[in-house]
Amino acid sequence: MTYHHFCHTDPSVTKTASTSFPRGRSLGILLTGFVLPVAAFTAGPAYAQITVTDLQSPYSFVSGQAGREYFISSVNGDPDKADNNGFITKLDANGKIVNLKFIQGGKGDVILHAPKGMALVDQMLYVADLDTLRGFEVATGKSIVAISIPSSSVNGSAQVSLTDVTFDGNGTLYCSDQHANRIYRIDLVSRKASVLIAEPALAGPAGLAVHPKSGHVIVVSWNKGKIFDISPEGSLTELVSNGFFSSRFKNLRGVDFDRWGNMYVSDFTAGKVWRMTWDKRFQVIAEYLPSPGDLGIDRTNNLILVPYESAHAAEMNGLETPSDGKSRQEKRTLADYGFVPPPPKPGAEGAARK
Image (cartoon, rainbow, N blue to C red):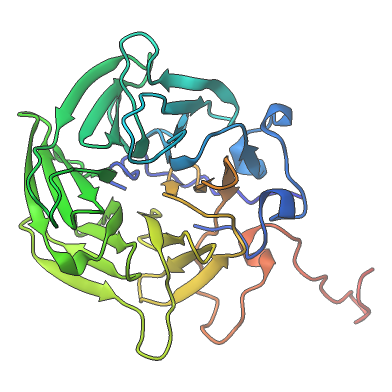
């Protein structure tokens, strides 16, 4: 079984400024009919599903800007405890593990408690770690910078707990604080943090991504399954919410965009990955997933990257290329996603091929 790969690339966009696998089950339940161990994989991530195991409560999965390396953060314990035992796994261009604990809390001078969301900026990997945004050198894993987020009394607590981080492509990082209902802005030149917005309506802001066209911060809500747009000035707009009679989303964890501007969100509790197209149509592109976390999109290689917290594993899968030829009424099949061959066409004399 072969995954379609589309080689039209735009290396300038990733989740750092940052389209789909089929409906089905995953890991031991078999998303695409088989699970290909990373150790057995030799052809490159564009050609098959890749499963990464031996992780410990993986939270986030991101790709390098050129799609040549990948990083997975593992909380490894209590997500709110400063136990200095979190780690980050590094994969090569083919999805093979280069180093399971490439960056490891407690090893050498590295401090890394409960790493959650990540963002790549040039040769730096920024990691949301409790009340600190930590920066590591991509090539070596060396700790370079630690930016502390100033605490203040929020909801009766002074604790800061960062959830995700994203880069706008212009020198600014944004971090979410799910417990405090805040979005922070960090200037990479001064390395100073400030509050972009503090608003209870954010309802537990979890995943972040910068819209590739508008430059606005897109936020997904954990508590109420909402999706928000926040301007660089801090203006809040609700894009999507659950309806009065139906609840599409439960607990949203991750969000990212493909190079065509389609948005992908992961629903941790419902076990689904959704795609919202540019004209605001929603489609479930995968379901029955074991706790899909802070997903990422590799725009260069057209891949979706999904960590599974409760399964202690992660997957890479090929994505669909949008087509204007498919009508809204015509139901998509797995063939649209590159995982099964299309139905046979009639032969020359009208007989179906066997």
